[in-house]
Length: 143
Image (tube, rainbow, N blue to C red; front, side, top):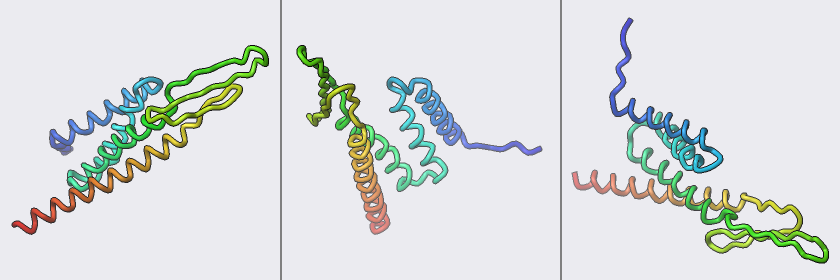
């Protein structure tokens, strides 16, 4: 039987991917989402080879998604109860100041944050891919 030889950098890369996914799943209810997104981005980029045009936009998009999400997600919530009517009112704010508010048992939607994160991720990935292609074409022209 012939042994399979895996280059050390490739093996280390996949060990890091598995570790990020494991930590992300174990701590999903707290900070785990960050590790899970990073692990998924690395897992998506891995089979495509070690080309900069592939490896650079994917982690940049994952980081941009997280930044966009956390900027738009309803984070600070305050609840009030009207003393006479007993009506509950909840108001939540994002880091950029968007207000999410409602009555009763209000749970604000995270859809605007997800869409904003996806939009920012697409813009950043396109920008990084464009930069990588431009830099590669500049190197070829100089050679």
